[in-house]
Image (tube, rainbow, N blue to C red; front, side, top):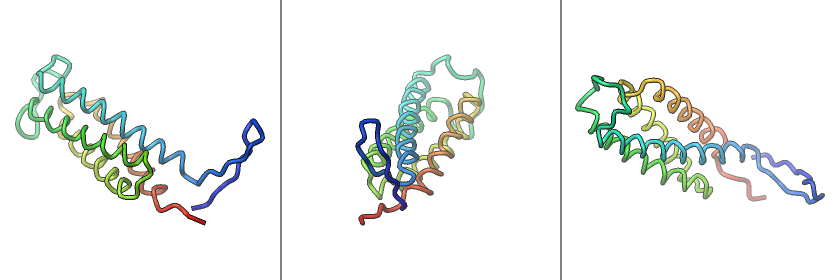
Length: 140
């Protein structure tokens, strides 16, 4: 990856690799989505009035989707930790976790449709960031 040298306000120089901001963005967004998934999962498990009434799901009920969302939230937290730590395996794990989250959200959409689209857009940005900028770093 290409590197750029910057001069800070205190006249110190530092090197920033191309796309490092996207990687940080991806890690932070995965973490935020994971926390929101965990909150949504707990709300669904407790059959909160937070969700749309009388919604029909692909299979099972709101409580089942609450458990699925909670588990995906925990998986996304693990992925975010790896991405923020700079691990190469976490790049792929993060893309898989964001993809699974997107698929699960569309099955969960009848419960809260607008929220589903917002979080799905975040998942797409995370997959983009990790696919384009998550490669091996130069060690020159």
